[in-house]
Length: 423
Length: 172
Image (cartoon, rainbow over all chains, first blue to last red; front, side, top):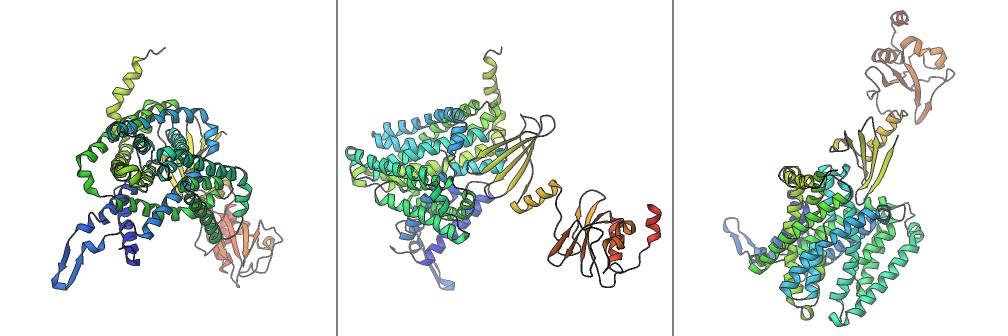
């Protein structure tokens, strides 16, 4: 099943549409639902379903013929485009101004938030015994989900409250960190040299990124002129063209396509066409991001979650990183002078993980098995999927029930406050 | 008036406007164009969502709030309420109306009906703030400000029906 027939693409989108509809109905983020849809349609689940014969109507359905192949070109490329557009939007909405404007608070809250690298690194290092594994799990556990958190903020109406500032501020900080992180990690994992030769790959990556930053810094006028056209069609085509072209070119040079797309987004963000691009390209991003989550699902064999080691590691990651995210979120809220209740809400919201953890997993998946071993290319991506499934649902639930949870937390948090001398 | 503007990365912009006392009006303009309005009673309180508007609707409401808005007419049933008693209404001038062909001054619409003509629509064209010298032609649509009763009288006048003028003159 190397080729994908049109009907398979149709099946994929139909399944995604159903999954998205379900997610909406139960008030959850779409990401875990797309993932599960992918898992269900993959070889491990649908592929293992036997033949279902309805002799009465002469119908034979063979589950083993219906599963979708993650290696099919369309799904794989679609997933790739999903990563590119997710990061393009991250760059597009990355607000350098905002970062500078409230650099002190964002700096403090964001630096506290860096603590979240630790639980993942600890688990990775203790269990797999390697630096690379530690760094991968550290990143997966560190990065909150901009998509889910932002959507929940809007759904709950918190967007108009003060707690939105530390949350969005910390996300901006995280975005910057993750762009650097992806640049280094993908150069390391996808480059040819292994850890020893990684320096060259990383230097090349940094070189290319430097050129991109340079282009972004001096290219605003060009970007502006590029979009100075009175046609929706051409605006969309030009934006997609330059984004995919630069991302593809970067990948061909061995540099992360995701990071390249991030910088292209940043380049467009300083033009006066940001809103227009956002409005026009959001549907494209959403379609391909859905394919990306689906693809990650297809790659995942759910039966690995029955494996005690994998399940144990996911559980350990949740148990360790949930509380640290909660703590850093709470402290972040306090940095912004919020009261205990609002800081508690920030804490609840920031625990959510999602798309970026999966992008890290995707990079790990495409690393060479011979060079990095199964732990990197299979076990860690599986852990990432399981972890995101748990944390994205847990995070949205924590936000939805933040006020009820607060009734439990209030005596603890506010009492603590009373102990400190009030002068 | 203090308006506090802040960026919401990935969402849009937020404006906080001081109302009376500690109360704040919070307007979130989404990148998608959607506007959400919230009110926050005290600095500690949660923002309560009042309503949300689409981009287009928000602009229309905005011009109404600015005091410079009336709806371009599509049919005679459209009306815009400005208060409990004051409405903007539209009346079509028919060929047999006595005011057709004369000037606005001649027609003395306000004295006779109580409604003030604030604009005249003629085909694609809109005559804003017409003067006493502006002529009324058959087929024109008169955009008028007044209460219900005034509009009813204007409707009859523009439609060429007899007007019970005694009553109004007695009122004034």
